[in-house]
Length: 325
Figure 1 (tube, rainbow, N blue to C red):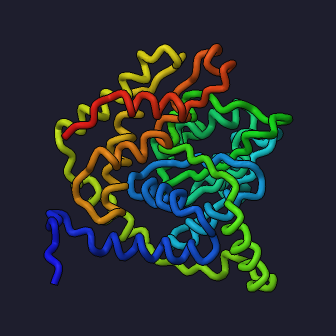
Figure 2: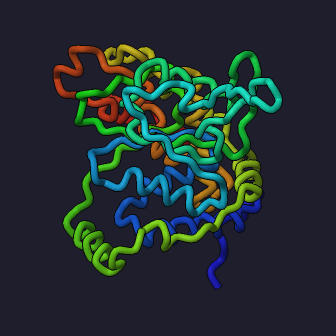
């Protein structure tokens, strides 16, 4: 019998079983997006929000709905439009004639998984309504604060190509997203599998084929296990160096904040856990660096003119810094 190379100090067996079940359930429908699914699971375990960017038709919304389906929690969807008001999202005070007083009617953000479709189609005042709810998991209306249930996760989608009728997301809001995941086109082989799967379903909704495998109680337990994942002091320094370099890089106008450093740490721990390890490696940090940082940095105008991307600069920074041994 093959000897185990290491023994986990944190029991991750139940977590890893659930992760495999989630991958299997979502994999029934989503073809060739294993990295996207892994990053979404990582975000759930790291207790963060996700922004998914991609052209229309690459299953951004469907993937978010499937993620909600595999978790046995409440789900709501908000379609952002230019005429959407903050009260449409958060809720509003409604006069109760029987009691002769105003009562708060909760909006669609009062759920566990909130899918915001086309988040960049709503104006600044509606975007700003999400600041408190995303950061503090609470809503304040007319001086009264209402706490949201746990777990709480916002999954937002946006289209990077179409700019007519869209509003650029404020930096303060982008910084509240743990990840920005970029979804690309499938390759030819994957596209054939997608078409075949659609044909075999014969009109049945894809979401109906997926069953819940994760409860709110399990999510809480797994998040506590992830917090216990071991991180060496030299890896903490490695994370700080990467983020610090974004603030001093000549290609960048805006670097990562301390929130980015904490996000990088939490994501590396969660990514290690879903891969069956109770310790973080430099490779974990490298894998999550781009999705954690790409929306928190801004290129200088001359770099944009050259056609550089945030991912290019992040790769240069990560390659430049010596990996701890």
